[in-house]
Image (cartoon, rainbow, N blue to C red):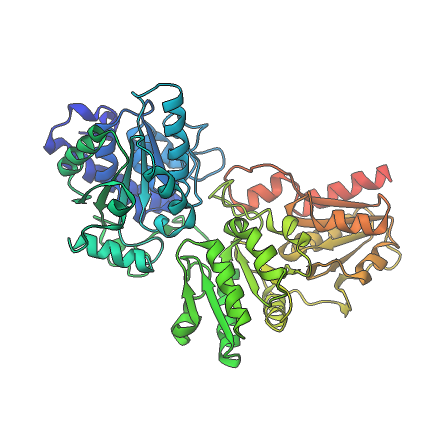
Amino acid sequence: MTLAQATDLHRMSAVDLLALAAEIRAFLVDNVRTTGGHLGPNLGAVELTIALHRVFSSPRDLLLFDTGHQAYVHKLLTGRAGDFAALRQAGGMSGYPSRTESPHDVIENSHASTALSYADGLAKAFELRDRPERRVVAVVGDGALTGGMTWEALNNLAAATRPVVIALNDNGRSYAPTVGGLAAHLTRLRAGEAEPNLFTALGFAYLGPVDGHDVRALEETFRFAAALGRPVVVHCVTEKGKGYPPAEEDEADRMHAVGPAASAGGRSWTSVFADAIAEIGADRPDVVCLTAAMALPTGLGRFAERFPDRVFDVGIAEQHAVTSAAGLAMGGFHPVVAIYSTFLSRAFDQILMDVALHRLGVTFVLDRAGVTGPDGASHHGMWDASVLPVVPGLRLAAPRDPATLREALHAAVEVTDAPTVLRYPKATVGPDIPAVRRTDGYDVLREGPGAPVLLVAVGPLAPACLAAAEELARHDVRAMVVDPLWTAPLHTALVRLAADFQLVLTVEDTTATGAMGGRLAQALEHTRVATFALPAAFLAHASRTEILKAHGLDASGIATTVLKRLKVV
């Protein structure tokens, strides 16, 4: 049996299915270890996905994955094995379900806890259109159940009779082991100790627990679930990293995600933060840290080792994390919320109303800010620096190097009456870039006496701006380069400086709409300021370097933009 024949699952014998599962695991290990991607979650979902495709008929029946990083096996079973060589590469296959790739991919979700709400809406649509033959199945990880949206959806699904099948993929983990009272309840369910359980109490039918690596048992249970014609939870117990010893033995995250085999080394921005926050924690017993199921990916591992009682993993619950941090601030602590930039967008209301309105000192450290790269549109952190400046009192820093990251973090935790934000990318951090001189409001990175051009370098784009200034000099165009470090609120000293230049170009790793350049132009009330940033669009996956270059945010692109705009001026 080969993967090429895997699209005709219904003709396979039990022996064939065992061979297929083994072949899929070998294929995933070989390919994902080469290209990079989510390995552990997919190794644990092999038999579960095979059973779903044998019972349900995609795309007539809709298979929704929460989150989408566990959909690699689904892609294999829908004829995309040949696309894995370019997984998560420019022009290649997405690491998540993608509607442009296949009619079998319904939702492009990489933000957790959403599938049940999609399922609720789709089931309503099929009912209104009298399409009972179309069934809705949501594959939901136990980690996703820790998010509030899941419970809003369960509340609505349980109150109806629409036949939604929830395949609970319970491997006891999101990135790390799942936390909270729900995790404890699922543990009791796995041991057969909870009756009635939380799901039946809400009104769902409950089937399980089922061995999530037994195709025959899964298939029988799913057929029974589909025949019930009502909302049902099928509790599938799986093992993350199943069948690959290095993943099974990885206690941290079971090889949740792996980098490409040829990926470059070097120190990351995350590791700089990890050292800095641990040092602050030693000096400041009032500093506590929160994370939404990602303590290690966001750099809190060292802090947690040294101060385990001062780290709070709230599960995949960003909104709760922010307001819980507000409560800690009210109680006399200074919370540091470490979170991916893209996920902070889920908690904007809490930042605005629960933190800023109450004038509370909470620091947000945004990893994966700006262009993220291979994870694609849903993971680019290109919104925070354009949206957050509207929050009254909020201060936003974009460090350019390790030294300014440490400096900004120390300054942020000293603020007691407003939210503070630090943002940095998923990338290797370069060496420190010393300022030629420092003045209140900005660092001068390159002097430019009499220069017609001012380049305002925001955060990690400082090296590209300095290189662009060198290239402009070869065209006999002088340029001064400054770094404001704190991009919000806009410092009056930067406004005064910019007023003296023929052309001011802010270079930013964020969406142009709402970026610092627009605020600077508004303050100057003239059109000599241009924002050079990312478009208001969902950018496809590629490497960070490729995406920045494609949008002109490298040295050559910046220099070319300056020369073109000088001609216009």
